[in-house]
Every structure is written in C-alpha cells, then in structure tokens.
Image (cartoon, rainbow, N blue to C red; front, side):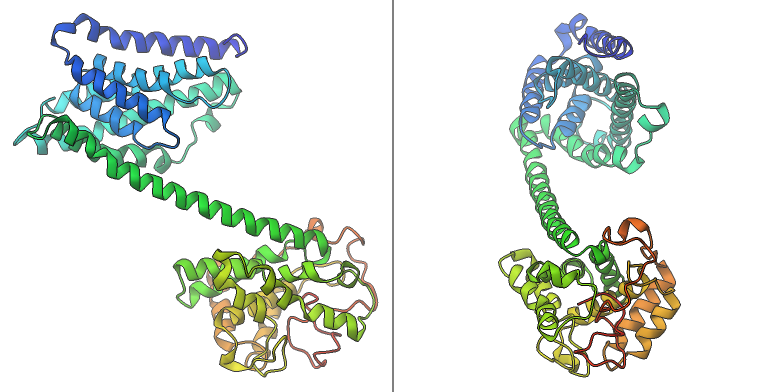
Amino acid sequence: MWALPAAARVYITCAVLAAALCAVPAVREAPVVPWGTVVLLAGVSAACERLPRCPLTVPVLLAGAFLLPPGAAALVAAAGGLAGRPGREPAGVRRLWHAAQFSLGAGAASYVYGLGAPRVLAGPAFPRAVLPALAAALVLALVVAALDGGVLVTAEGRSPRTAWRRPLPEVLLPPLSHGPTALLTAVLWHGPYGRAAALLVLLPMAVTAWVLDRCRRERAAHQATVRALVQAVDLKDHYTRGHSERVGRASVLIARELGISGDRLEALRFAGTLHDVGKLGVPTRVLRKDGPLTPEERRAIELHPEYGHEMVRGIGFLDEARAAILHHHERLDGSGYPYGLAGRQIPESARVVAVADAFDAMTSTRSYSRARPVPVALAELQRCSGSQFDPRMVAALSRALDRHGWRPAESAAELSPLRPPGRTPPSRNVPLDHCSTASPASGEARPGGRG
C-alpha cells in the first residue's frame, strides 16, 4: 500500500473505515439479523468473484440489499470484494478497496430500498417493491462509479473531469437490468420453493452472459485477424496504406443503403477491408515499381484476387467475403479479371466492393496522384455505370455520401515513405479501379490504385 500516492492511501483508508462503520449495525443488532441468509449470500458472492468473467456479482449484491438491512448487506458485499481476483498488484490493497467499495454501495442500496419496500416480499407487497428496487440499483451504480472516479483521481492522477466522465448507459444499464432479477430472487427467497429456487434464478443470467462474452471474444478475434492481414498488406504496398479500411467503410455505407444488415453486412465489411489481401502473393518489386509494367508483371498483379481467395479459404468466418475478394475486379461488360464475368454473374458483394474500391482510390492522395474531389469521383463512377460498375451500387454510394459525408485520406502519413509528397513519377502505372479508354492490359490512365 505504501507504493501508492499519499492521497490514494488516505482515500482508500477512509473508504475502508466508512465500510466498517456501515457494517457495525449488523453486529450491534446481531439477534435480529438473519445470519443464515448473510452467510449463504456471502458465499455466493465470493464464489461469483472467483469465477472468470462472472456477471452475477451485481445481482447477488442487490438481492442482499433487498433481503437484508444495510449493515448485513454490507457484510455480504465485503465477502465478495475480499475474495475477488484483483488482476494487478498490490493484490491485497485492491481486494480491500473492492470490499469497501462494494460494501458502501450495497449498504446504500439496502437503505434506499428499505425506505419504500418491506424485506419480506409476498402478495400485494411485490408490486410496491419494483420502484424501490430500481432506485436501489441506481444508487448502487452511482456509489460504485463515484468511488471508482475517486481512485482514478488520487491513485492515477487523472483530472476529476476525466475520471468521472463515463457514459451514463455504461454506468446505469447493468445494475438496472440486473435489478429485476435480484428482486425476483428476493421474492422466491421467502416463497414456498425456498432459497434453492431463488438462487436458481441466477443460472440463466450466468449462461446468457457467458454466451454473450464468448460471442464478443470471437468477434474481437475475427477483427484482430483482419487487422493483422491488412497491416501485412499495408507494409508490403506503401502506396495504398489505409486504403483497405476505407474501402471496408465505403462498402458498409453502400450495403446499408441496399438494406443489407446483420451477418451479411459484417461479411461485406470484411470483404472490403481484405479485398487486396492477395497482394501478399505478388512480388514486392512489382507492387512498388515506378515504371510501366511488363505483360508478365501485369499478369502477376492480376492474380492477386485469386491469391486472396486462396489465402482466406480456410478462415471460416470469411466464407461470405471470399466471393468479393475473388471478383472485385470483374466488370459488368465482361472485360474484367480474373474470370471475365459479366452482369449478374458477378456476385453482389463483389459489385459493392468494386465501387467502394474505385471511389476511395480516386479520392485519396497518393505519392503518384492527387486526390479528386468527391463530386468528381462520383461523376466518374456514374459515367462508368453499366459498363464497369453496377448502377445500383453507384446510386447507393451517392445517397450514403449525401447523408453521412466522406473524409478521404490526404495526410502525408498515408503517403509512401519511399517518395516525398507531390513528386510524381512520370511513367508510374496507375491503378485499374475505374474505367478509361485504355485497354484492360495497358494500365495507363486508370486512376485509383494499382490492382
């Protein structure tokens, strides 16, 4: 504890003393305190704190606040705080702090609840307890949040404005959502089915929270995989740094305008972000070449959609994105690559990504080209509608930009480190992302990003 700043030591000591004073009435009124309930709830609270990512601590604390007087409710909370997993050193001080924090919150919640509802809920007493229960849950949330802010100020030196500036939904929603569950636990506690049935109410909440936590972790793993692949592409092809994320954002804008949502929307985000992942299979000297490409080099570039398709084949959550990665360089008139698909033969996801890819390429500043204004880029897309791009996708992008706007990347941080900004090589091949009078094999005068 002596490693903490003096202000933090004083603050934690005061909180611990206040929690101890809060528990004193339970000792003074020992004959009338239901110690069986205290011991059982204290054990459940301690067990919940020992389990990894267990969401039952707040419902148990609230159930104790509804069933017990303030002092006894504080003892239940203290058991959970002392048994918790602090995660970082000093572990003893952190356990003591959480015990004091939970005790003060549970004691205050119990006091507020007791002002408006009886401890034994039965018959007509139950409806009258709903509002006091919600008020108690609100008090618990506010006390815990206020004490947390004080620790951030005294121990970490944060400003009060930063320490207490947490979004209200983040502070209030968990306790308010757990309040009804805790109230149901309190009702069953004194009901005909007894304490076992009351504690069984907590099981569905634990299972649901566990499933949601697994889903969040899986989603985070997916995003980390995509980020790693995109960073690998950006490191290899400096000319398009940041391009992948912007194509993912533009793909989502188009998809939402088309009414796509849920898993398909997420698949399109991944498809747009990973559309150029196949560049990892293209020789670096070809990607960074300043002069015109030879026919062999151009064929190597045009293989990147197939490389990308193969790279993500074994990644299950990218199954729906594979078609867009493979076909985002196809054209409606059949002159694209790699398979020369035409019209509706091209998957919808690929038609979305093709428009997003070309739009960002035209509106981004690169070391070899200046960004075009958004209206000019949209006009170019519209000019190529029907021959290269799906008119529906172009119209959807135009509507989305009218609503949300667009901030193209023009910062020097995204320019290639190989060349100073504004210096344009005279014969560097320009990209293949939107239409021009040049043939598909020439690559000259096709702005937007090579490949």
